[in-house]
Length: 374
Image (cartoon, rainbow, N blue to C red; front, top):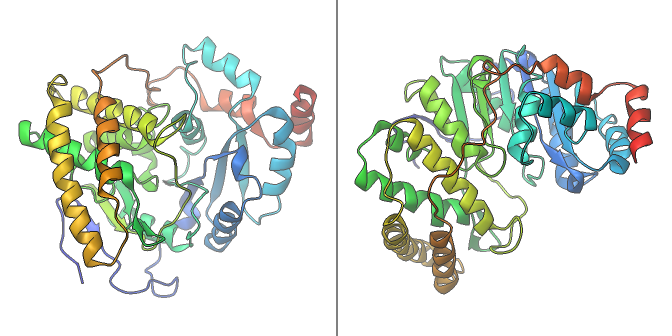
């Protein structure tokens, strides 16, 4: 059984962890942020996540919700059925859009933007946990495990897990794009930030926890680059010594197509852009012109390794499909463009209270206003 330490503190699942067996963690001083969109409404996975959070009983739960006005009232009513100190932040509220525009923060919408808005509402909590709502295998242990390093002198913790479902290897964007790309960059750049980006077993995992001080200093990518951008700022604030990764055990959630809108190819472009932005922040100059070819060589070697691993475990493995994905991801590697990140909450003139007044739905009057827009 694996228990080897990495450059960042690595907490392994060496035995089943139950609430009684887990040392106390400060759930009462913790805010949990769970971004949702219309598709999560009354879904089985989201129901499971919220029901498990009832057992955790965190200090507060914030749901940044991206949904059309006519879907919001029913969504809020459904969320109110759970025994949680929960608030809904409507990310599409017109007043919120006006406030962001007034402060020069309007722009592309996505998961990163939603999370950033919610983070501004939880800065009074000592600790913050962020995770998705579409995890079919979610248990209350996720929060306990992510919090444990923070209660023991770490500032940042990220989840990791094996993505094996239906007799196949998943986690394709991480396995086939991020990991070989970072290894390619490490071959060319002996820089601590590159080593840090490669130190996490599942760098694209959406589950992380951090102190409120670190959260307040995150410059958040608006869309698919959220996870990589978070790592970049975590390196700047916490470094190797203040960071940890935690085994979350079994993990299943919905899968995306490779092509099409919101597919893995589009996501790879966002992830790559965020990665290059992190490197630029730390003075690493990447030769993007030759990078796609070098990446494809490294990724092809990974495919050979995964084929062997899959065969050893009796899993189905389509080598040609994986190589086709590699080719698509290589085409998505582009020079660094404009920096569209949202600023750290410590560096913006926009006040969290302004966001709360414009978008948090905490009264019947708020819902009446939303219904008037439908």
